[in-house]
Length: 373
Image (spheres, rainbow, N blue to C red):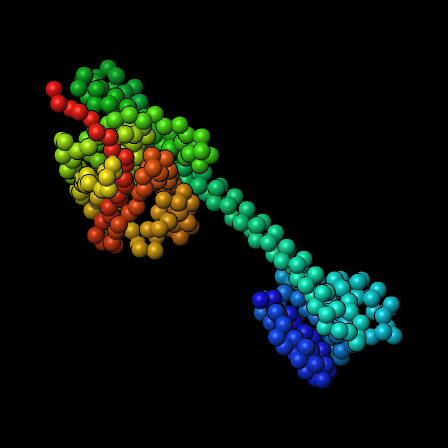
């Protein structure tokens, strides 16, 4: 309900206005002088309706102060004047920034029409201001997200650089086993880097509805194994216990294999990130509804606060956490997981308790495959 501030030093006029607005679709606030009116403007006022002739701060001065203040300059002001001073007061009122004026005595219908017209303008300004504020906020978050993505990309790039430096320095003395290990580690870093870049590109495509899936039957175990190889270096660095509970005869899933390997790799990598050294990650499958399979990725990490679980897949959630000095990761991997799973018609969610780890569940469509010889 719009809030209107009525300013008049005459008590009888204020009583008359109160009776006039009784039952109207406005909330009214009263002030007996200009100074009191300026104080009440802090109450989120939508329109000021003020008498011109008042002691101390008159209506013109009040209007001027309202329009000079950046916080209130867009609040419409309607001034009330007498017939005998109509021309002079109208000119002076417009010069001080008044948006309209009305001549006393007046009918409520006339006043109501003027109020509604000015409130429409105010509503449009508020909408424009809110949109502009959201654009500014969105731009700031995009800039911070870009910074965090660059930070994330720098880690595997730094590892690659260190590996190449070691290869160069030890080229003459390296035995074949050490050389192969370093090359293998370098390949894993390159795969991580490629996965992170692919996440960024595919998120944009899926948000635009431009992502095409190449679906065919896959074994869940094969997808998990390929994903685990991609993030093996992360698992080994923290000595994580990686366990799977996937029956050999688990239904085949009809999916885009490349996208689902990256879903698993992102979920495993995310679990590694928040699981303590020598912690545990467990992947299992469960029957869901007919034609669907539920896959669960559990960790023994710190858990996710309940208030954050609904937003954990939002690509800007990690920016908000970074602003609160809680996380320093872009979190785009989880955003990719959500979009990729939903592109297959499934859904993804998380169950977690602080101090007891997290389990990410998602569903995928199954297909019957005759594996008999």
